[in-house]
Figure 1 (cartoon, one colour):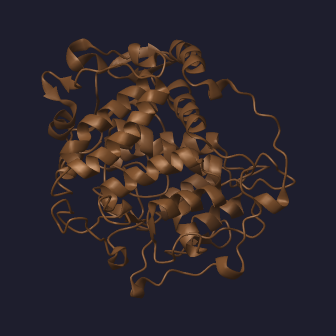
Figure 2: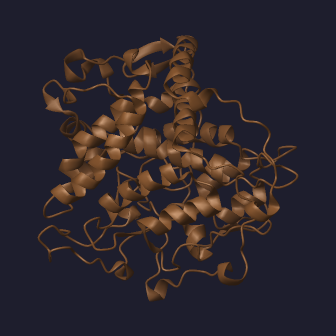
Length: 447
């Protein structure tokens, strides 16, 4: 977990081809790419254009209670408590906003993430359903999900005996590799990298992130700081993890959404900083790190909410998240839309050529029109889900119907066009990724 990792690739290699980025096998001028998507984004996601007024401060509504019932307590691992790769969820369990054992229902996840971190109910609902489908047991009487690995506390109750039940034990979020738990996290390692710890914080990565603001005159881990580090981790992971893979849903969407949440939800929106600040001490506390800047120590399971911490005054909605995702990746850091993975060891990253999908129905530029990039990702989730669910449930129908219902809401809200089945040279995209990228094959596919 704390082993030293070679970080010589933390710097992006310079290009002598001008200000361009590799984008689906094409080299497209960054400025052109950004300008075109800015226009389409403004039309496709109205909230991206909204100018937010300076936040007003309401101490009674915003102060996060960390006393009494919500006093910090370490997890009791001996009793079966679990914690996972998401510090936001870990803190909620440590402060009893979620059950302290680390296993919660869909409703509990929605309520707690909204109440404490200001995550919009729409985002929380979608993510909770997806998490329960792939990491819990959506066909139980009261679907629950472990925020870490398997927990005996989950105690799933299968409907109709085991006819529609799980083929094995609920995997938890830590067991959803290439679905929810992904490669290239800002602070966690990868399941199939040389260390193999995808659950606990990696101090090498955390220290590198911390150092980005360590000596700043006004230390603040803004979303831009977090996303800039995400680019560094992307390149470092290519050079370190021979099985690195970056798929449309798990790589581009989930991985970067987690980075966005850290920069948008973990901020302290106090009277002094009503629009939020993510200080060095706030970063340490939420990620379970203590000690002076030059001698920091990570204690597993110690993620906590600091004293005098105030949540966002306004919920962070689904459209807020989509706008941030497109702007902070495709527009500002287009390398983070490079779908692909290592194909033959480290430093062998091969990106997907979008023009090859469905017999040329896509190309890189078409994906920049309207909401096409988002629609493409969710279409892939729709098509890949039966393959993944078949390895989890005895009968995929009930679980798939829950997932499809959530997807239909998204397709409608994004006004997505009808798609043909996504394929490359006649091979469905799920199978193509599995056959092309060893990291996808190791997890028996992914999204």
